[in-house]
Length: 488
Image 1 (cartoon, rainbow, N blue to C red):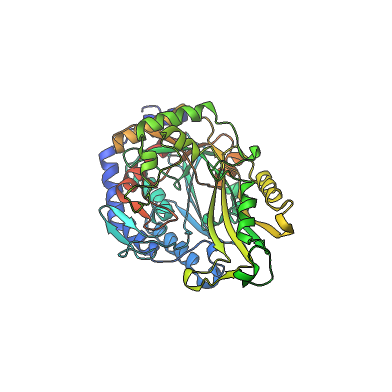
Image 2 (tube, rainbow, N blue to C red):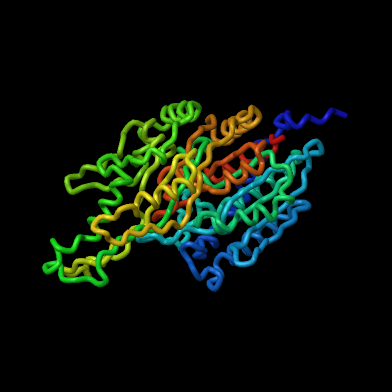
């Protein structure tokens, strides 16, 4: 009898990649795509965007549908539970025992089922809750961000088992509060901590890709502060001809206050506390990624065209600087407004108030709570004209910088990328936020992280015409299966 390989040599297990791809592709075509079509049709918006989520029952429905699908897969010894803590959104937890006798470690697979709101600007033949498959792209809200994750994760495990390849224990954690900042998930992690085991690998299927030509490993995530900034100067609106020049504009005061935060000419955030140094390894990776993607780093966005047929220009056309701007530098976005009537309703009135909803992305190493306190003080201190200026924070999260990648993982992801994409694995930081990653790293300091996803160019998560690139979903699922099999 041949000796079993040691945990650190788990990658020597042979995998029939053709059989793996056949199983994964058939599962996607026959079951996953139909399941995601059904999922798209359900407006399971995250609690921050649906205050009546309990009454509407949409989150409960997508959880129930996903749980039923998992149980139909008949993965041997799989135990599934929908965990519900009082007053919190539900979580799917599944546990599948190891088939490799020499491993006491656990692979944790993560995804979420809640969605961003509808947004405007969808193509006339598309809609947020209307699934449509076109040229390998499955359109609809939540398809790529990331309703596919739970289905891909279970399929990857089922594929390994079908091929008879030994693997470590696998557990799944699928939440329904991610798009609201995952404030409900942390209590679940605490409640389930003893059941999670000794996590050696975290597979997070909620991230992006630089292109659709290779596997991409996310190396960092930005932090986030979100909240509302409101300026009030009157108790009620008055005739602009009578009051302008005497009553200060609430919009002008809001602009003045934001100038404390951001240089409007360049977009650079002014407080040094919102910045951090870029680690040398991440800078080197950004340069390597820029060599791969080139101008596509910025060309991939849907730029507006002016009347003279010239397109809006990016803040920089240097691919390296563009990558660093969206991953390691703080930026401000205004995502909503109040107190501004629609054009058709806008009379000659000096409005009493202006409110902005703002989203401030923070570099991965900046503490979110400390930055939130600094932001509130900055915006509210010494308001012009003694106007009423109030910043109400809604959420804050510290970003994440991946721990050093161990040899087994770097070899496994590169091998999986070569086998299923035909190109080496790429490494890229992401500008979004996944609050759970920091929590898991602190709770499992020895774990490695495979943070990846299908959100490539023009996939447009959170915006109109969001889509899931189905061929990438298939290849990613096969790649995840290979990495799980290689995990110690």
